[in-house]
Image 1 (cartoon, rainbow, N blue to C red):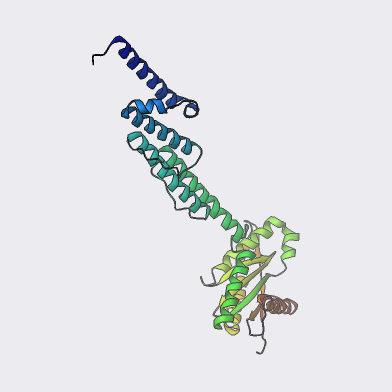
Image 2: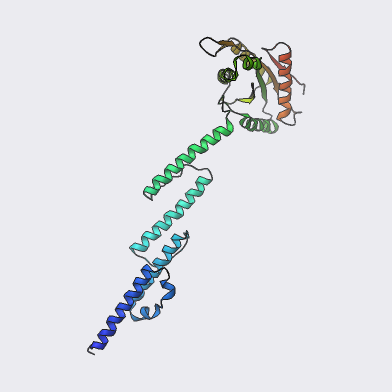
Length: 303
């Protein structure tokens, strides 16, 4: 059958209509709802493939735009493959973000170009801020030694080890003698300098397995795992001798002779909590101060 003008006209009209539909599907947000594509699909198998591809492209693009990373489409090809790759990368990025939220700051991204650089920079900053928050939560701002929060965590573990395994430990409370006089005479800035100097001098005398922490004001507390009271008392006396022979250089003109008093105790089976041991050390410290200061006294309790 020879094509006539009418058939040619119908074919041109059909092609133009098909292109209008395809264009509308590509650019109009509501085209898939407003256009009846069935007649176009039925005209030609190639049209059907194109329409299906564009429809899948629209659905996958819309899903990505809305944050739906689990949308699946059957179509394949370069453009769809790029979107599917992006979808996969975003799924992995979501997993990495959750890991960061759980505290894993080792996560790095290397598959999203400039975004990867920004993400990695953000992760590094979060790690820095987190480390700083941990430091602030666990270390004294002035002396930079552990604070009461760190101390109580350490004490709880030491007491738990004693309860379960019988591992002994001793506690010493260290107090700077006549510290109020230092503040009243020279001012709080000099008082702070004394606190920092004494803490720096004392912290170097303990093992890495001990904890030496600021307990409050001019008081420090040390916990010595696997150390019984006689050894702890010897250590305390050595600390007193070191501080007694040490002068705090407050300025070119001012050098202060500082002394400390220490109360020592050891965990025993009758203790119900760490507070029982701390109380005995505190009582021993009180006795040391009342008996002349610059000395260590141990609180001994027969089991």
